[in-house]
Every structure is written in C-alpha cells, then in structure tokens.
Length: 292
Image (cartoon, rainbow, N blue to C red; front, side):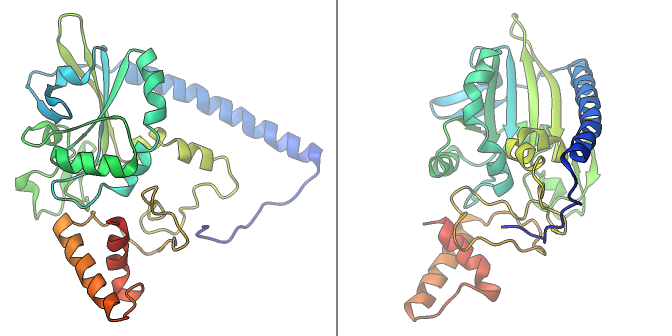
C-alpha cells in the first residue's frame, strides 16, 4: 500500500527518454566505481585480535566463536534484535533476515559462514525461528559479553540514560537491543580477528528488497514516515488489514508476558461482542494476531 500520492515526471518521446537514460547511466557507472573503491577500502581496514572467549547456546549445545565459523575462514554475524522475554523479533531485523537463507549456499562457496546472534534464550529464538520458517544458524549470546562488546545490547549502566554508544558515537536509541553486523576472520593457527562492523543505515545494503524498490517509480515510499521502516511487517502479517501509520515511531516488541495479558483482555472483550480493532486498542489487536 502506497504512503503518498504518485506525481510522475513529464512524458517525453522515445528519443528524449533515451538521452535522459544515458545521462543517468553515466552517474550509475560512477556510483558503481565509487562503491568498488569503498569496498576495497573496507577490506583494507586494520584488524583487531579477538582475545575474549565467547560461548553461545546453539541447537546442539555450547558453541564458541570459533565454532560459528563452521569450518570456514570467514564469518559474518548478523546481530538480530530479539531480547530476553520478547514476544517476537524486531520487524526490521526480520525483514533483513528474510534475505539470508537463499544466500547461504552461495556464501559457503566463497568460504563464508553467516550466523545470526541474539541475546534471547535459545528456546525463544527457536520458537520465533520456527514461526518465520527460517533455516539459518541462530544462536543465543545470553550470559556472555558478546552483544555488549559489539554495541548491540544496552548495558545495565545505560538503562535510563538519554543516549547510548552505538554506531561509534553517542546517540538516542528506542530499544534495549540494536541491529548490526560484524565480520571475523580465522587464520590457519586458529587466531580470530574482528575485521569490520556496521550499524544503522550501513545495513541497508543487506536488504535486497530495498534494491528492487529503489528502481521503481515510487522507490521505497518512506518519505513522510516518522519511522522510515514503519511500513515493514513480519512476513506473516501482510494481510487485508495491513496499513501504514505515518506518525508511528519505532516501538520495541512487547515482552511475552505483556503480550499475553493483552491477548487475554482482547479475548474477554470479544466474548462480550466488543470490537477491539481501532483507536487505543489497535496495538492490542496487533499482538493478538501475532500470537495466533
């Protein structure tokens, strides 16, 4: 569903269209060259040695950071926003993660393992992963410093503060968990190095759907949205009731207990023939649908 009216440019002759397209092509080629240069500079960044031992809870038991490489020399970690007790994962992180499974075999062919890490307990990760139908390797960092060391979870001393350290600077962030990706290399001797991390808009490149949208007339259609990704839903929530609230801000997913209480309240009200699908009850209805 579009969030704004479409205002198209002028309509021209085929010859004029071709001339304009060729002018844009020059800029696109320059952009590609600049992107290649930036990628080269990224690869040339110095590395830092990872000396701390990190242990994760995986589907088959405890795993170290070295285990996450899965026998390959390069590891990409996606830091997925799913905190302890959350009823579901972050919609934006889910949007990114919808692009992972299809790429796994191609990454493996280039000596790369991609793993997803969250701070929620493994049982909660597994439940949400099953709901989403994902197959990628997803582990819990609960009990380790991994999320804190890589800027993606709020530390206890940050609670209640107006700003947190994220994306290499102090800024406000509306959640106890934060998105990001980190890259590691493991040499023949078993030494592990941190080579790169990216956060915030730096993750756009991971979203293939955005690249498709960018070549359409409407583009991402996010102008005017208070939270640019307010239109994004979990892939099982796009239905006939889908609509975009242009004034909506990012809200951290509810805790499971809170969502369950909302569901119970809604069920009680519906039992008495009340409709709880509008106004102040919209969020409650949203949570009830998510737990079906």
